[in-house]
Length: 507
Image (tube, rainbow, N blue to C red; front, side):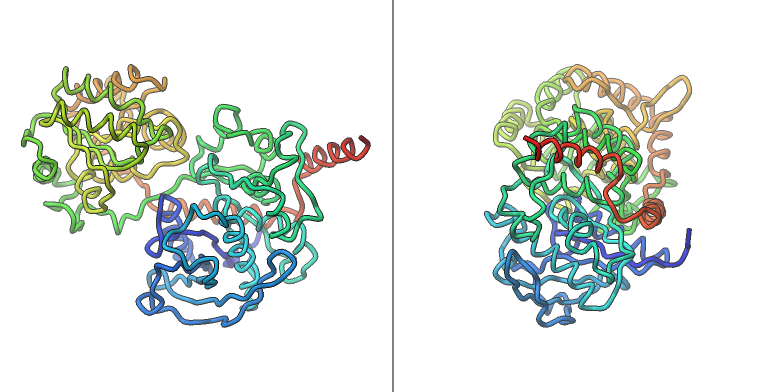
């Protein structure tokens, strides 16, 4: 297989530092820079939202009037170019009708908005006469691109050598719409997709499902999650397709930006430190207790949690575990995040009952997040499922010891501490119950009171390699795998779809 530098167009509808609602933006803001550092020509493309300032971002127009097919007509957009860091070009799709909004998602025309963006991304490559080896698509918003590459662009010589890689960041969000989407996307003549085990695909448009069928290579953001989603428990209704694609579904663990997140130089924390000077970390614990209006207690375990307060993130497990740990172990809690009202209310009730032990901050503050990573002794992630998770890696990088549910990327990065063998870098629980969570927390607090062992755990976490360089190397391997594959739907899946169409036609 050729080791020549690759050309990759990276599609994401949110990218740090330009627009962010979640972890997708963090990945899109860091991974392309790591791939560029390996010597590849990677470029990013995203929508130009209304809250972005072209002048402040130093954007330059590169295509003033790009005609983009949308339904049975075409619509114009402009393409602007900026830079991510010092080296990675990023293009912005400028269509005021669709993107001049104050937010990114949750608009009634999101189907048209993101299909237009995706089609504009494909057409931008042609307008720039830049033939990508790979379209790297992310989540349902870009799910039509793999579909197009094997339908309306299949015989386009410009893309004859282009392959698609599709990354699942969260399978729960699939982009499900009605027949009109097929018309908008220009693939209505191909009809709905059909699968013998998924009758629901016969009368809806599932953009995530289409990407899983047509992409040359599919990956998730951790190895464990790649296996989990092939089961009914985690497959969100698409596991039959994923099992059919098993030979071309991979897991690549996300990384963290170790320049942006570095306790040795972090300007948001009280005292800088590194793995060789853990004693300085105590200053950050005292500062966090003060900021959270909790008593300064060096010898009491301070627990941190940064999360959306929703069922997926394990919010339902928190109230009983917080009460038990406060009553029986004297723990202190600093929680940062927002979410479902009933979870917020339950946590606020605990603040009212235990004001000297529980601090809940129903907002998001990047500066406070840094302080929680630097000041908490134990960091909690009880997620019911977690495709990857970045917070547990950031916590370990800052010397906080994680307690996590054994699932997805949490299981790939946090290994249960075994005091007899000295193995492990945190504490995990298998059963998704308050009792199991609490038991793991009790074990962590017991070790917290053994400073020599605890410091060994902290150092082990801080020395772990969670860099994007490691992830970038694996993505380049995926790109080369995709390039080696023929430009068609995988044989087994195509045979099953053709059989169902044949049976349907006979009825």
